[in-house]
Amino acid sequence: MRKECSKTPTLIDELTSEISLAPPEEELKTLEKEIKEQIEPSLPSYSSELLQSIKSLRKGVFLASTLICGRMITAIVDNCRSRLGEIKKKRREEVGWEEVVSFLREKGIADEKELKRILEAIRLYRNKFAHEIGTYPSIEEAILMISGTTLLVRKIAENKDEFHFLF
Image (spheres, rainbow, N blue to C red):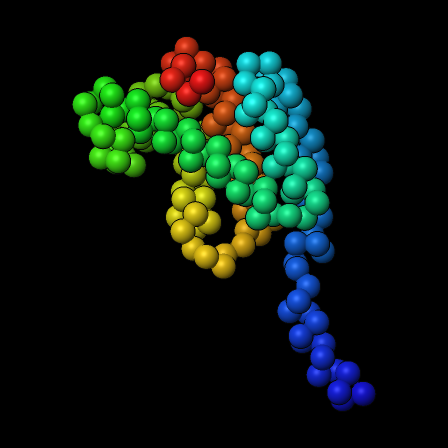
């Protein structure tokens, strides 16, 4: 009996917490509806990626879900940096993070409350998951990534003329 009990901590460590947690289905359904109705008509490739991220979340693969959103964030931020570089006659690498945030504000990407949510998702990805090996998102972080990225992409879809350089 003692021998069997000593194996328990090892077995628990080997289980992923991701499998035991169920994502909040109502919130995911709301996000899916928003994606299909407001993003898919004008940005189908972004819509497809967001829906894949939700699908991964439902399967309990939070890291995949987060990385899909992170890839979209990286593409958008890098394209904003490139555009700012053209405008300011700088190399993309010379364009700082604060310049990107100011650019998004100037373009009217969102009100301050929405922009805060978008920036929270961007910072979470760039500061934690893009640079720290061995970190894995919680269900809450994965949902934050999906909702923040969905908001960012929806705002881009609504202001497509201002963000033509992304397409």
